[in-house]
Image (cartoon, rainbow, N blue to C red; front, side, top):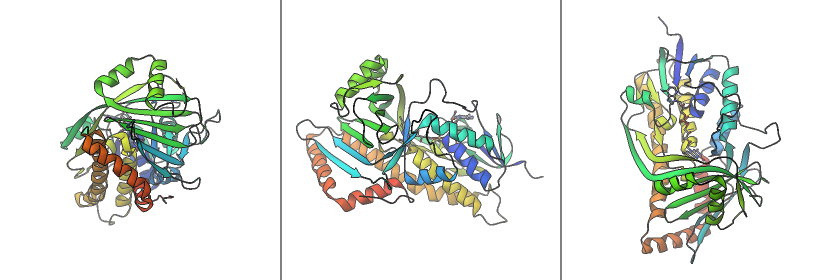
Length: 381
Ligand SMILES: Cc1cc2nc3c(=O)[nH]c(=O)nc-3n(C[C@H](O)[C@H](O)[C@H](O)COP(=O)(O)OP(=O)(O)OC[C@H]3O[C@@H](n4cnc5c(N)ncnc54)[C@H](O)[C@@H]3O)c2cc1C
């Protein structure tokens, strides 16, 4: 007897919802298992993060008509990044690299997370072919998209290797004295990574902070009154955007590098953070998760007519295609963290020399930007 659903998706984060929309548009019967009610407006307290999304992710979300636009009060919910500035903050001999985009080819977009989640939930509500359920139904294929703490992944017996970093990411929204000018700024300082991501459009005066610091320091920063945290950030980035004011409370995320050994079993697949998680310093976790979504949908769409959706050989095509990409991105983020966290003065000197040399190598910078933007991206300079 045929099952009622072709695909059951467990977890309604960005990855699960994007996958549900893509598969339903390919005329598959989809069940989306959602634990919490769908957001109709940003939840309280809202997720204060903003994601840096690359051109491939934008193309996917645009194609699904869920790219967040302009809010009712006129605030832009996706800010194009025209320039990116990365610095090693050694007071005596600072070194930095600047990546240039153009108005028609930004380097990336900084997207408000609650706005993206609401847009996705609305699209899921309107899309025929998706049933939102509280319990997992029988389906030819079940895709686990429950994030890095997925209970279903463990219950299905997938092995998952996790290496916790000794860091927590402190995230907050801050208003700035001066406009950010569409520049994403990142500092590496004694193992810490401080990023200020531009919000509210090119001329905006608000940024999303992601400050990855040792757990004890994170606990201290999170316990500060919001004004005191804003003052610490203002000082740590040497007033790069003038004085900063808090917008709401900060929140913390413990960080890890993790990956499932296998991503598929007969009738089962993992996608997004349930399959892999990485340090946010390169802003790639969700981009990689949306890469999983695009590839899994492609593999299912292009399957031989006689092959079942849960066929292991079919699912292995997805696993093979994605694992190389994810391994490369995990190495890059882990390697950068290790390199910039090194306290040895010889390595520090080499690092600063490398950073300055890299800044002069236009061809290498162009290639690096192309890799970060994904296959749909056209790198500017
Ligand atoms: C501080 C920080 C900054 C980041 N910045 C960026 C960035 O700039 N760019 C980028 O690309 N990535 C970034 N990331 C990574 C990004 O947040 C993740 O890669 C992304 O959220 C993964 O999406 P997901 O849908 O796979 O998992 P999640 O977002 O974790 O969603 C999982 C969903 O499954 C649900 N769920 C869990 N268990 C169950 C269950 N048993 N039953 C039903 N539902 C369940 C959860 O409630 C949730 O809705 C950042 C991460 C952090 C921590």
